[in-house]
Each structure stands twice: as C-alpha cells, then as structure tokens.
Length: 194
Image 1 (tube, rainbow, N blue to C red):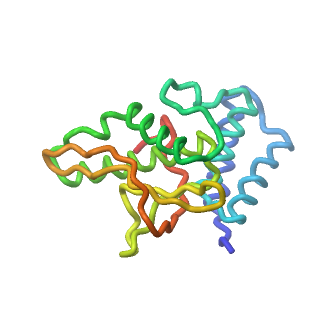
Image 2 (image 1 turned 45 degrees about the vertical axis):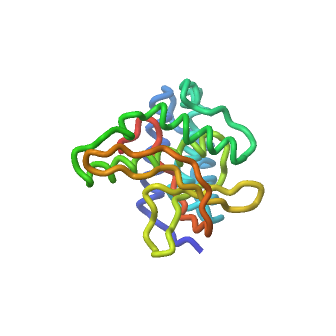
C-alpha cells in the first residue's frame, strides 16, 4: 500500500486552488472530488506524481482553462499502441530540440537527457497512455534514456535516446528493450521547469 504523504496532499490542494483562481472562481464543495480522485489513483498504484499530474490536467479542462493539447507538437490521444508511443517520442523531440543539441559537458548532456525523458513521459500521458514510467535497469539504476508503457495489458520498455556527452550530440531512437521494470513518473509538463 502507498503510504500517506501529507505534503503531497497539501501541495495538490494548493495547485487546485491556484487553478480555481486562474479560472476566476472560488473552490466550491465539489472541489473535494479532485482530491478524492487523486488519492484514489495514488493508492490504486499510479503513485503521487503521476496521479497529481493526471488530475490537475483534468481539472484544468473542467474549469475551462483548456488543456495543453492545442500545441502542434502534441500527438492526439488514441488507444495505446507502439505506433502512438513512437509518434510521441518524435513529436517531443520536435518540440524540445534544445534538449538534443551538443553540450559542453557530460553533466549537461545527462541533465538534458533526463529532462527529455521526463517530457516524453508527460506527453505519453497526454496522448492517452494510462500507465507510464521510467525504466529501472538491471543494475537497479533508474534510466535516463528508457521508459516503460503499458500497451494492451503488457508492459513494454523502450530506449529513446543514445545519450550524448561533451561535444557529441545525443541520437534519437525508438527501440524496444527487454525486461520492463517501470518506475511510475508523471514527467515534466509543458511550461514546467526541467
């Protein structure tokens, strides 16, 4: 069972209140539904981060603030498939080319790879995938270039990047790898810092 996290709940409430203010409305008693949905999905296995991102986007839409799917780089939602995941990876690369450039240091290249992967995760949720995460490698380390998605009831792991290093650009790719071991993560939304 997922342990209760008072800080996650408090932060989520603050986010909801901010969205209500942005919409020019005061939270009403029905606003508690959003908290209930977030906690339910967290306890059902989605995790705090992914559940929070999912329900904040739903609340944005319910309040008429518009979902960020209006970007020309966002792949329209559809049934989860390998092709849909591949299109999300390509579209994310087109939206964030600065993360795929040549960097001066190995550390900067790795940081960009991490951000690129997290942005892919968020865009996968946006495209309709319900279960998404980073890949835990056999060594136990959480990957900076691989993600997991559940498609038709089965987990799949994909390598999306050959990580660059000082003076050498990363290489975009989409290759299935074995032994999916997901670490749930909501990623970084558009407008969110990396």
